[in-house]
Image (cartoon, rainbow, N blue to C red; front, side, top):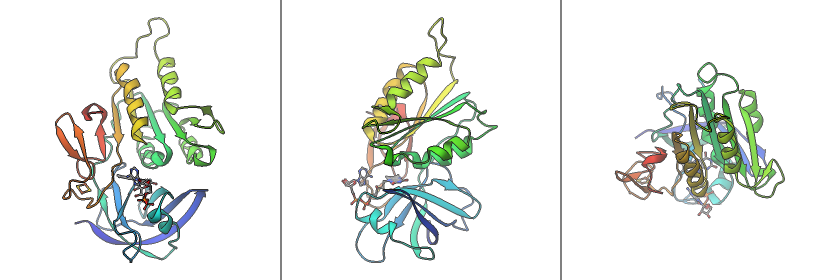
Length: 268
Ligand SMILES: Cc1cc2nc3c(=O)[nH]c(=O)nc-3n(C[C@H](O)[C@H](O)[C@H](O)COP(=O)(O)OP(=O)(O)OC[C@H]3O[C@@H](n4cnc5c(N)ncnc54)[C@H](O)[C@@H]3O)c2cc1C
Ligand code: FES
């Protein structure tokens, strides 16, 4: 089991409900992929009882970052942990994104804290893998206070599109409205045809309803998608079967077979 003690380097608030926690990279883990997650024991007491999963947000030689939103007991307790504190962790766990580098255009779609793993992926896909201007990120959230990381993505050269439910920032409505517009805009103006197989790829993470809508649009235009799924987890290592999702080839485990799946594999 990949269990280790992680020393917190920093735990900073980046928005009213969002934090970035940086910890020392586990020494033995040479390979950590965007889309994989760490399973964190947040406190030494029994509350919260279970570990909590968080995707890798940024990978560097010395440290790992996770980006989290405070939504309940565990994440609120995590926000109180300080520099120098030690966290019991397991990871990196699961299978990450298959960062296919041949696509000319890459569209990332993040709903709420779903942007977290997409930043690590965007870093991996950075120029020259994806030429400048070919990477777009669509960020959707409830309000402007829940939009995070947009500046970071811009610094990577990505085009950033924002949607909020209440219209306090960017487009008022669903992030998939913007995605559809962009996909239609990138099609041949005369024929309405796409630019051929392998032209565009979509990677997304966010609420299930958002992923369903992304898949609906992508399937219509034949665009391959990889989605990072979130399910309630107990063991995190494939033994309790608590995180099973239905796929075309039977039930699969988000913690072990995922969290990243090819969208066409999922039974929606
Ligand atoms: C593979 C994976 C990667 C994740 N990566 C991140 C990340 O990078 N950043 C981040 O902020 N969060 C991430 N999450 C979600 C995160 O694990 C939960 O937000 C966290 O466990 C909530 O713990 P809590 O004790 O604060 O809230 P709880 O008290 O457990 O729950 C508070 C509320 O959130 C709901 N909730 C909790 N967990 C989930 C879930 N998995 N799916 C849907 N609803 C849920 C509960 O129903 C409840 O309404 C990830 C989850 C998975 C499975
Ligand atoms: S959380 Fe136990 S099998 Fe996935």
